[in-house]
Picture 1 (tube, rainbow, N blue to C red):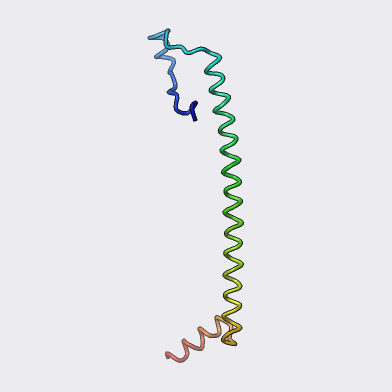
Picture 2: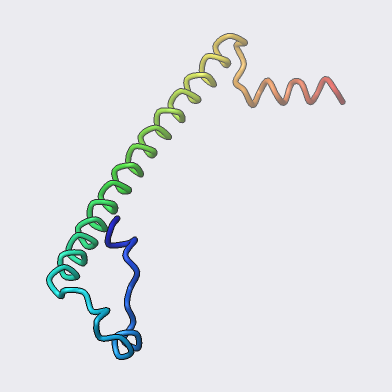
Length: 90
C-alpha cells in the first residue's frame, strides 16, 4: 500500500531536479512490495470469489428445497398449480 501511495517520478522531473532521485535500493524495495501485494490481493480476490460461489450454491439448494416442500404440501407441482389458477381466472 505504501508503494501505491508513493507518487511516481517521471523522467522529465528527474532531468529538471536531479536531487529528487530517491535511493535506487529503496525504490526497488517498494516495487518488490508492490508486486507481492498484487499477488496477495489477487489470491485474496480469488478466494473471495470461491466463497461467493459456494454461498450461491447454498442459496440455490435451499430454494430447490423450498420448491419441493411447496409441491408436497399442495399435492401439485408448482407449474401445475399455476396453470390451474390461470384456468380458474379465465
